[in-house]
Image (cartoon, rainbow, N blue to C red; front, top):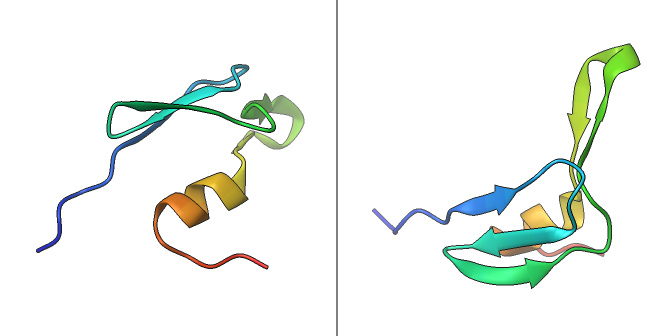
Amino acid sequence: MPPKTVIKLTVGSIKATVDGRPYTLDAAPFIKPEVNRTLVPVRFVAETLGARVD
């Protein structure tokens, strides 16, 4: 089994870490209370997990 990748994002912050390494996001995650959802920068998460995004 491959090792797990740990991505840490903080609501309202453009700072993130991946396996302890710091990154700066283009957009901060935020909570949209009227629909009870948390939105995150999907490209960053997807590419970190190895996906190719066009």
